[in-house]
Amino acid sequence: WNWRRSAVFAKADIVSGLSSVDGCVVLDRTLRVSGFGGEILVDPARANREPRELRNLKTGERMPETELDRLGTRHRSAYRLVKAHPGVIAFVVSQDGDLRVFASTQDDVFGFDRLHAWVHQSESE
Image (tube, rainbow, N blue to C red; front, side, top):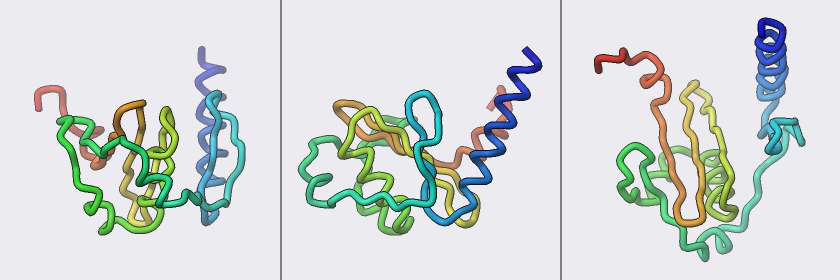
């Protein structure tokens, strides 16, 4: 168990090093690195044709896509990727260190943020 735990942390350290390069790090379903340093290009028209709507993962409430405008290019491109392709998860780390996640199902796209706050919440909150 300790060996596997150490291996996971070593691999996570390698992937985090790749993420310091400008661009995205792409992992497959088995968490193998498929590429890094690239840009996610999804035709906005294709993403707009998809019926999936953006929802808050915690509440399930629909969120207006205009909220993404304040977040910047990497968030919008990650959102378009998961909207265009069901079953995709995108982790977006902003320049100030905030982490947001977008994940899609056949029906919806879920977005959530403030993960750093959730990690530090106590069980009683």
